[in-house]
Length: 143
Image (cartoon, rainbow, N blue to C red; front, side, top):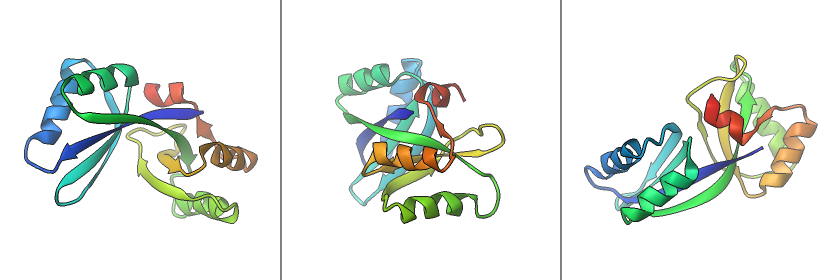
């Protein structure tokens, strides 16, 4: 149920984001979801890709600082209040959301949100006990 995500630390200057996407494109790595957070000096680009190991290797070869973390993909009802219903379940169970971002595709008519938790296994347990669909990593890369 866990999804591998890569985080790339990049300087906040013109052309760096294009360089990352060029390197991945030349390696035939497809980006499935992304999030970019920045400060005045640097950014953290978080990606879900179709080949995590290849992406890590080629980016490291080009001297990028890259690491791999575990996140989960959750089906969220695509309607007003859908995300709130998930967040309330997590809150009632004292599960902290470190960050989240939307996935590019839908699953069975639902939105897909990528979540990073301080306790991934506990979050998976709580969500599945509450009949919330947590997508398998293999499923995420094929959406």
